[in-house]
Length: 153
Image 1 (spheres, rainbow, N blue to C red):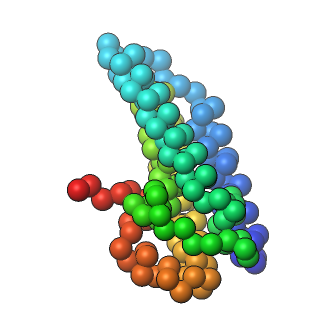
Image 2 (cartoon, rainbow, N blue to C red):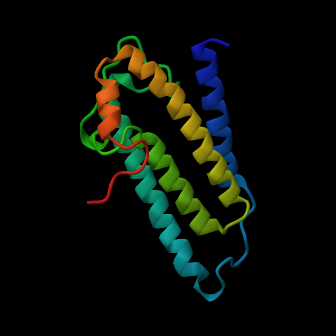
């Protein structure tokens, strides 16, 4: 399997997991009397994840692609959210998934979100191996910038 095909495989599984996350059955009253409050917090977290995603998409500009194989005419972006995390799109997806888990309850969304995390880790490792080949500065950037979750402080 070549890099492009492998990339499209990861993308297909990623979109499948995202679809399952939103369409899986929801728990009825998962948190007892505070379910409504936790649900509202979940919706706010989903909105935050969506904002992170859109901001990350815009910041990538012409380098944006769903496939983890870097575009031939792409450029390495290390500013904005990309100065805080190497993969803010994946971070946004994980924030969004956490919001869905909060809103919908723990099962089966929690398992799907966990699967999404593991897939994004595998996809990021693959993507980073290609970015190191394409951009000489990527290795130094990766050493100082966390993969998914920004450092606090």
